[in-house]
Image (cartoon, rainbow, N blue to C red; front, side, top):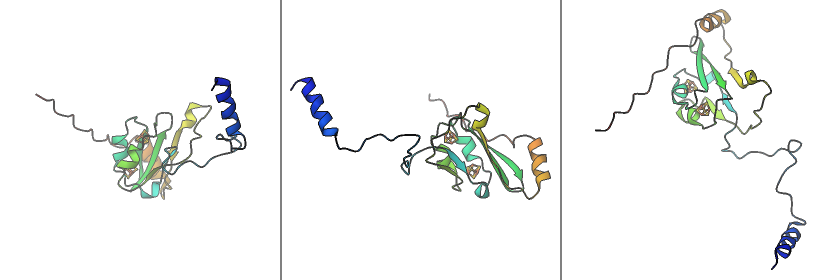
Length: 147
Ligand code: SF4
Ligand code: SF4
């Protein structure tokens, strides 16, 4: 069969089929359950262990103490590669990657997101913020060189 014939056959086969594409952004599709989109953090469950911070390969997440057993997360969406390592490392299921893929912003500053904790003592939270990020996270031991 000639190239034109093959093309015609394909065109005829496609007539009457539903389009494979959607009219985005007017039409939206639901992403698969395991899609790795925007990272979300539940402050109510965080215990401040910083496993997420330690294991993040992009240094995109910072956990800050804002009160007695209260923590906030600062996520830099521009750095986050949605690898899901923090979600796997978290022992309390605090972090979740959602189906939201619309992350673009006109200003880079808007990509820095803070998941705030409702503090019962705003003064205490302000004091802790002034003091800067909580203690340095423990560094992973360097692997021993093979002899
Ligand atoms: S998804 Fe990956 S890159 Fe993004 S904050 Fe978590 S560990 Fe870091
Ligand atoms: S690993 Fe989970 S519990 Fe620990 S600091 Fe990160 S978000 Fe909080």
